[in-house]
Image 1 (cartoon, one colour):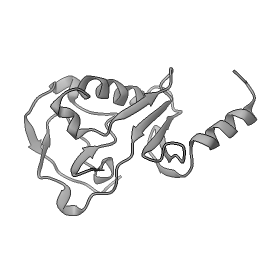
Image 2: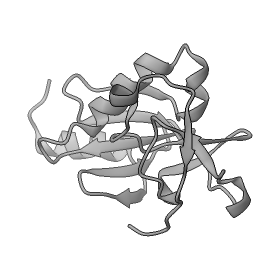
Image 3: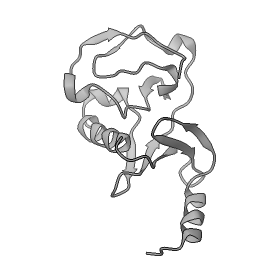
Length: 146
């Protein structure tokens, strides 16, 4: 493997196109190479949100609960790069009053549409480990704030 910064920049530019969003620990990019996905880059140490999303997806992917999550397609060995299905924006009427108890952080920007379903595409913090794979629903107080 090369240690050349210029090669790393070119490889990054090949994989990542436009910056969509920057959060507290990650940046989310579009990708011409995988246009149906986003690339999540986590450079800040100690948050492990990419790893949490990957591990969450591994637990739910073969269950009925998978319908609530954007699928993770690939993660780098150290977890700094995650490839996830890309959602599209949801309309106001597509945000339900109740959501599964294992989801949280009900900011509209954390959710989007895949097919006919509203899914979470930012589940680096979730309550699945605490609440388990429950069918229990809770009131979702949707927020547009950051």
